Length: 257
Image 1 (tube, rainbow, N blue to C red):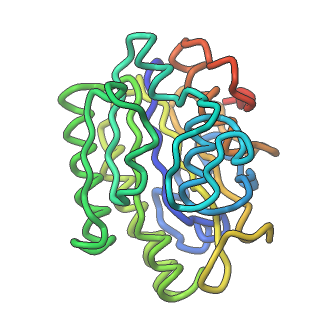
Image 2: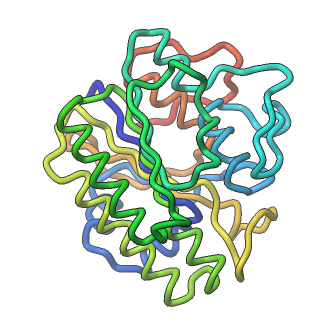
């Protein structure tokens, strides 16, 4: 493994992965390395959690506390900047526009945004996964980030663990399976979430909001369920796989894969 595909399903709780019963979800959780009760950061809100994932520090350090981006007062380099400085190619395919500020100018080799609000998140998920699949096949980036927003939208519309929500989790795994079909064994696939949710919201310290899955999938891995794990550990782990030195300000640790 010398490349990474990071797939984030917004708002996906670990218990929803089991409940949806998707065959590919069963395959990657049983056949990969599965941190089934990892933690996100407070506030458990989409943009702060993504900033923590990409910059390996808590919101108290990067300063993003809502879904509105503001420049960091004491900037920490994100994963795309670190990888770009090491000569790696980074791709970014997403369907929630507020994520555009996760990387700095000239750190991406490829970026595509598909509006979930215009196309609807179910269709935007399909489009994002197809674009990502085609780009990875054509260009083989060292690091590709793919964001799927349908699950979070379903949670806010109908409630976490509702029928629509579980349907959205299953549809997301349809997209993930399509994206991963035929992918080179060079890629470590990471499937995760930014936060969970309860009722029709999230953002609290309740376990339903704070617990996330982190799944590592590759034929070379020894399958097993692991304890611990935090969203800020993902960036250092990506760098370890790509043999790039993590930024000195990062606070996360490398997860055992």
